Length: 282
Image 1 (tube, rainbow, N blue to C red):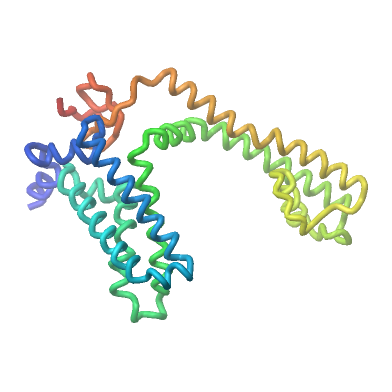
Image 2: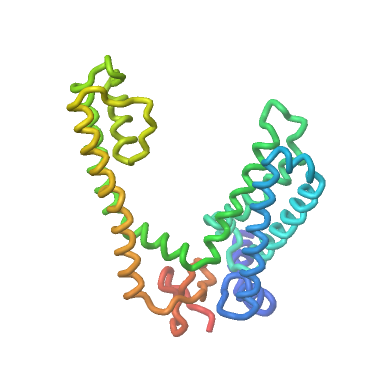
């Protein structure tokens, strides 16, 4: 019994499943590009409906229209989700992946809203409706620049963590100094409060709820504001340099996908997946 289930979940692609897989998961064909373009348009439209529905005057006036559109979007996303499960070799693996969970979150709230209205003690249905904004994450699966940025952030995460650690040490030290210089009488009642002020000053946010009153405190604040300009540019430079290096080293991007692990970007001449080693379909 277990063997039959395993065989079913890992059934090789062929026939209509292979054609559907190529259209849905790969955009190097005309049908694949059109599918992605239509799906992006539907996602953006559904997000616009969610945003407009949150405006009270518009939501009350067009409530019936928004309700019909929401069900149309939900049905469309449901069919897309079922099609993805039907054409992959391992449906459970896809369902538990990041994009599989995002696909599920894009359709689940509307169906839950049918079951929850009477259970007021649990949650307001409007809160469930807000979960529809998870549809915007579906865009990352269809735009290569999102994936490039994600890979650059992942590759530079250690440098960014070291940078953030240095920034945390600076704001902690400067917050402690300001606590000593200004003191509770000027609003710096504790080191955590002074550190909060240092963070808002270093990031050039400057809420103004706490401000130095002494000349020395204002001098320190001015130095931190000027320092903040340079500090904010560091993460951008790290990620930009990583993206430039990846662009020079990476081959021409493709949407060719491994049927086993669903890793995208396989080169046209590759015979085996670069991630899991599975044999690729020609």
